[in-house]
Image 1: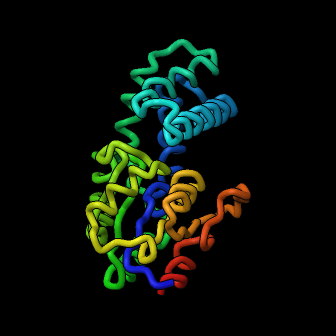
Image 2: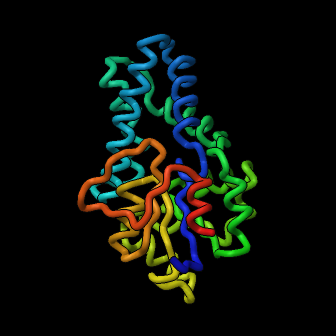
Length: 230
């Protein structure tokens, strides 16, 4: 492998989005809905399933992005049989989410070690202001040459338009000298594969991939990824 450009996903690849999300949703449902114990666990799982499904629908262009934020808490409350203001939950969660500055182990180190060898690009389906804030507060922003978000581009991974914009802004980038790195099978790996890019799937939980999705390489953590790229 001879790469010059690394496109890194952010959430659950470098930033610990899931860990922060779990903590934020538990705090939100405890404070706003008064849930505790097994009721809180059930509410968290219900939200995660609904939210994940909505994001999948967005990635496949089945719904508009804004629909996620309009519906995820509404559908969660309906599933739980709770009468509460879904818009208030979304607003409160946005504040908690925007202050999630958790990183996955070795995130800083791998970017420090790779920055002199590669052009490092962030390619994320996250919200523009949120992702820029989180990168700034974690100190990771200094290691990226460019940051692309789905909100900024107007298209999300795995849509080819997402990758088109990155390539348009980097005339020296080719499909041979670029690799897509991420944890998301659909957004990152299928997106890169469909765009004829090499892909590296970060798979710490040893999930199985569908037969039609074939990452070029598979690693279980960031130190292993660094060893592969060095």
